[in-house]
Structure formats: C-alpha cells, structure tokens
Image 1 (cartoon, rainbow, N blue to C red):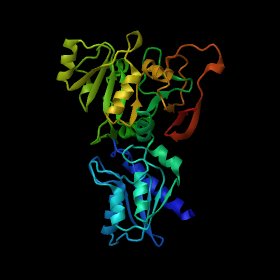
Image 2 (image 1 turned 90 degrees about the vertical axis):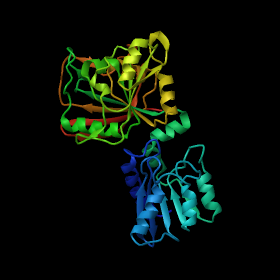
Image 3 (image 1 turned 180 degrees about the vertical axis):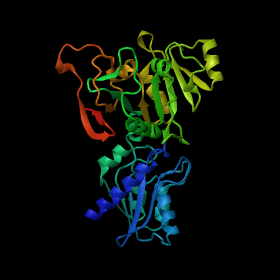
Image 4 (image 1 turned 90 degrees about the horizontal axis):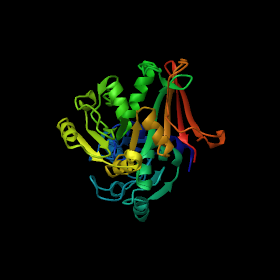
Length: 365
C-alpha cells in the first residue's frame, strides 16, 4: 500500500467520527472514493435504516457528476454482505465496478465476518485489509466489544479536584469543573447507547442526564439506566422528564413499579449478591438491546463497584485546578494491603479543556 492510501484512510476515519452521535446501534463508518488522485465522493453512516457510508459516498460522487467505475474505495469497516435494514454494500460496490477496496478493519458481526471481503474478491475486485486497523477498531470499540464479548464498552466519567475528590464533605459538587469541561462531557453522552447512574446520584442531584450539544437536545437520546436496588427514587424526579428510562432493581415492589411505569419508565429485576443489582447481567441485557457503549455518570458507590468487578474499560477523568482538602472520593473501593495490589491504568490521552485537564485512561490488559 502507498502513503496516499494512509492519507485517504485518515480522511475516512475523520468522516466516521461524524457518525458517532447518529449511527448507533450500527457501527460508525467513513468512506472515501478516489480515482486518479482526486476524491470523487465521501460519506459516513447515517441513522439506523438509512444509508451506510459506502452508499453515501457513491451518492456524493454522483451528485458531483462522477461515476465510480475503476475507482478505489477507502472504508473504515468491511462492507456488509447481508440483507438487514439495508441491502449489502458489497453488492453495490460490485455493481458500480470499483477496481479496489481498502478496508481498515474486518467486521466481527457473525453476519459479515470476512464475507464482505470474500464477495468483493470473488467479483475480481482487489481488496487490501488492515490499514490503520487499530484506529478503526477504537472508533467502534463499543460495537466491536458487543460483537466479540456480548457486552457493551463501558466508560466511566469522573470530575474531580487535584486531590481526588468529587464533592465536598457536605456533598456539594456543583461545580468542581468549569463549563468547557462539562460541555465536553456531554459530547460523550451523545455517542453512548446508554447512560448509567445510581439512585444516590439521582436523589442528590436530580439530573436530567440528557444528550445535548450547546444546550440543544439531540434527536437521538441514549437510554437512561438507573440502578435503584429497592426503588427509592421519586417518580416525579426530573430524571424521568426526557427520554427512555430503565430502572433496574433487585425485586419489584408492585405499587412503586406502577408509579414509575406511569412516568414512562421500564422496570427490570436483576438480583445479584448481597441484595444488590447484578451488574454483569445488566451489561449482558444492554448488549441484547444493541447498546454498544455505556457511559457512567454516577457516584463513588456504583462507579467503584463497576471498577471493582472489572466492568469498566475506560475512565474519562476531568481534573479541576482546585484543592478541596477533604471530601468525597471518586471510587468507593475496599482498602488495599499493598501498592502491588492496586489496579493500574494506561493513559491514552491528556488534553486541556478550559481550565481543567481531561485524561482518558484504559484498563491495562
């Protein structure tokens, strides 16, 4: 492959990023079609049931007055080979008589899993696989994890002071971080399939947990999931004002459940150990509902338990230039006897957001 191949695939990855707020539960894919050094068309995945990236790029080329015969197609995920909500993209590329397809990453979906590449090659189209594969995989970490591990990718957001506290000792937490960091955090809500929180957070803060950009409510709202073992939440809480809500408890109380259902909530019983919700079973249920990414915005109890169980893949930490001295910790975890016992995370990215610092960490394999 040539250096220009890398440039065009990077452009395709940039396009794929634009699909993240709208494509779930489908993967976010970008596509660039090139011939003789000129870009003919570009596209990215649209909402469910609408065009995939390849079809968008073909239509874009046509709108620019180009056919794509003999062109090279750069696509961040293997073209689909099956009839689902839309026809197979591989068949459309064959019909358009493209000469070459460069694929960043194979699709682990059992309905595809190499069949798209095989279909193209059998039609005489040159196919190269693996260019910027790591970046393409990470673009769809949620979809990939759901396909290969039957669970969503889980991200936990934490906003803390320099000395690691998320709130004062009296519980006051609004606001530790600045407006830029808070707006940045909302962007991750927009890309998630579900937002997970605990009853303590809802009782204390009355959060809406909606997906907004610049204050504007987005058309695709993630499922809001409330872990409330004993249904303590008040049905009139603003948490239930917008979007779909799923309340997960240990055992249903008929009267409380009926009141919550009148507010539009769905109730799910998942009993685990020690009278708590089975969080592992919850993730499997969310995967069954085609949730690719879970975004946690919760207190130390739920966030800490998810970390303790090894269910968090990524930490999204916003650190404010403030020292609280005393306060509430970000994670409620059992004490360690030795530093060698502590879990170590890998720093992926560090950025300044307003006056705060954003650090993205991933679980060390």
